[in-house]
Image (cartoon, rainbow over all chains, first blue to last red; front, side, top):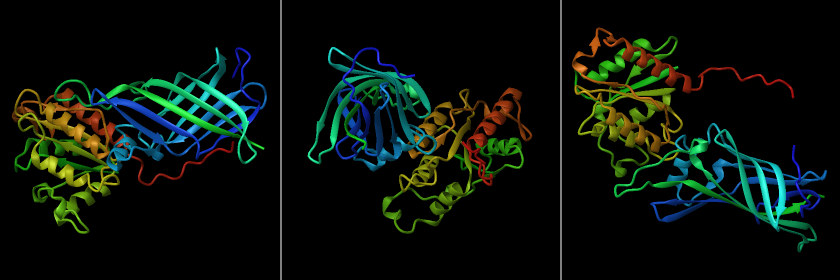
Length: 182
Length: 189
């Protein structure tokens, strides 16, 4: 059950991610020194604090992965990586949301490629504020780092001059603008 | 279920083709293993030839893979790697990418060599290539060493090796979706 371990700044109500003004991205070191970034463009994330026990949950559609390279995208969707045929969604469900010294801390279960593992994401929450359309909005930024091998995404290739093609630690960055449900 | 067997060796008395014939014996009914016999006809991959129409032998390879529920490859080892003709066939089969005939196709790789390592590096390289094509590569290997003495009739002489081959075939067929399974009936929530 979701719990709030201390008084938080989590606004009441149900808040849904605005797909235009939100992003779900990832970054990973590759070729030893460079940072590769990608994103998922199709997702739905909800902050539900309708009963005083806030929950953050959502799903990300794997086939929406955007890496600006169709060949790489094809490989990412294949069984070597996400296996989108069998596991077309990433899912997250929070188990605890709190603020610590002004920082937003979210514990939860992250499911990738059918494997569920606990993660802790940290970031900020801002709002609510009234936007131009007169709707209330909340901004949430969260970041966490996972070892992709724990989810079975263990493809790699040794580089001829040493090191590996892709690091195992992948940073997930979520920037959300959430609108209050009427 | 149809398993397509592709031998990476073109030689008439190939140990790897023979290994696939043994595999055909251990495929549990009603599944069947059919040997692809057109590898030698597949021309070198050339993107200029890979347009609206492709060479007939390459199209035949793509169709055979597309029509199969799973693929079992037996590879010899040339210079610590897979033979050029097999790599070339996988290159043809990988196009267009994504959406090729190998995408999400269950594939396992086995191999025989006359040496003491049983084409283990060729198998690893073939798995790497297949992963890049988008295939569902079964994480197994079957190095059959000393191939000249490895067979006894339509079996592998080593009983443990023969059992391992049967296990690999089982694992491969288990990965393939049932061809004519009825839609699962979902209980009302």
